[in-house]
Length: 256
Ligand code: BJW
Ligand code: ZN
Image (cartoon, rainbow, N blue to C red; front, side, top):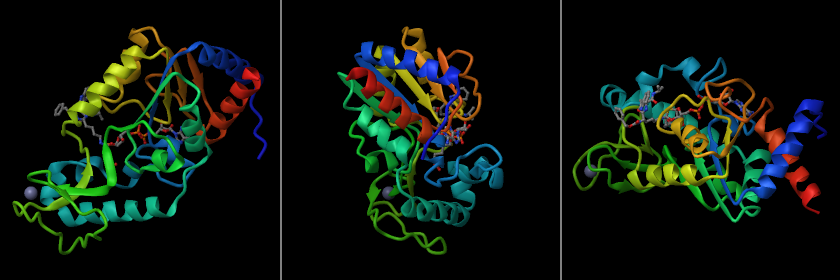
């Protein structure tokens, strides 16, 4: 596929590539937009998951307590989609970018596991992983390869609590080690990419702000503007699955 970018974007790519060559520490934060070109629905926007379902009906402990069947039906539907899709060129480009820097870490809000499937090694999954199961009450892990029947949700052998997906719902704390490392890496970054996220869900949304405060170059890649766009040094309004492979090619071209 040939993708044509405007001359302004081409000029920005040259400048970003120069900054990438100078950077030792690169941090990337991704959101649902990175997986959109694989066919995974995003959360917000007209095509987003939240367009059809209200988040407070599905992604909170209260929702699970009041309607566990509905919540499991939703997660089973998403597991099915995720099981059928493949990483896209954006995921693969990010996996290759890991080899370009002295230090590189990929922080993702996505629960779909597509970054690892594309070959990324150092991945911080802030919001968990949709394919894992755990106990609602004691958080013990439960086998992941078990299909959950929403009409007969299995219970924890240790405490009798209901089994739930191992993801982070609204109002829940993120894993302490994971978010601490994400902050630490962001504060030390020379260059920080925020890709395919609406940048409104905290604490993830504060990571690019932390990087910028520590004087990293902040680059946003998103098909739309976000609250972060105005703080970013570069805002690239292109689909990440198209733009990232071009950026990577340009990096290699200039390096050789
Ligand atoms: C493309 C594209 C293409 C499309 N190429 N781009 C501080 C201030 C205000 C509020 C809070 C705060 N601290 C905490 C809160 C509360 C809350 C919060 O942030 N609420 C906001 C909505 C305001 N946060 C929490 O509750 C967090 N917990 C916490 O902070 O604990 C401490 C605490 C506890 C109690 C009280 C107070 C503090 C937990 C947040 C957990 C979020 N969980 C979810 C569900 C995960 C499980 C699941 O998947 O089911 O995570 S919600 C959902 O949003 C999911 C996502 O990871 C997350 C972010 O969404 P994302 O990835 O940005 O997707 P979209 O759809 O929003 O955006 C897609 C973007 O892509 C768009 O911009 C498109 O334009 C773009 N795009 N195609 C490039 N091809
Ligand atoms: Zn339990």
